[in-house]
Length: 189
Image 1 (cartoon, rainbow, N blue to C red):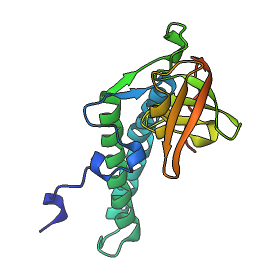
Image 2: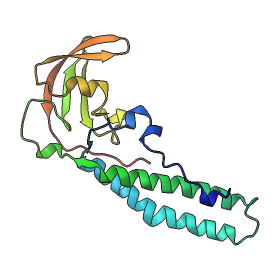
Image 3: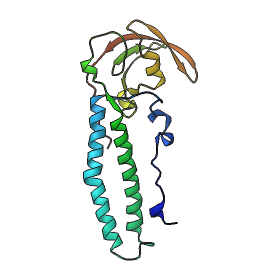
């Protein structure tokens, strides 16, 4: 059967790594910066990358035998990957619930978008910002709201001690400070 008549894999949420899945029945929470980053990526794919690929594929197809034409074969594969990413981003943005940390009333309770300073059992002080699953950046200490550390911190308040369940056991951590500030979400290079 010709590939033209087969359904392409949409790479649904079942194919995503665990850290990128949004829990069933939950909203896809996102900061304004994360939403802008995904929207910009989608715009670039639709207006730049995809048209360039279709132009290359058309050129390669005009060169004759497509079965041994590397430019054509690679171009079609790359186009399928690009279309899959466009569908994924479109779906993510449609289901996004944008939450601006700066717009939240001042509170000492941890919610989505909070930047939290906490003290570990070994005496180390650490800081994390709780962001959407598509915004995770461990170098910047941005953790998904579905991550174990975020789940332990959510709804707790400054001064509270919470239990963090880790593969190696349970650790008690103390929340030192909670603040809501604008988070910069960089575009991946």
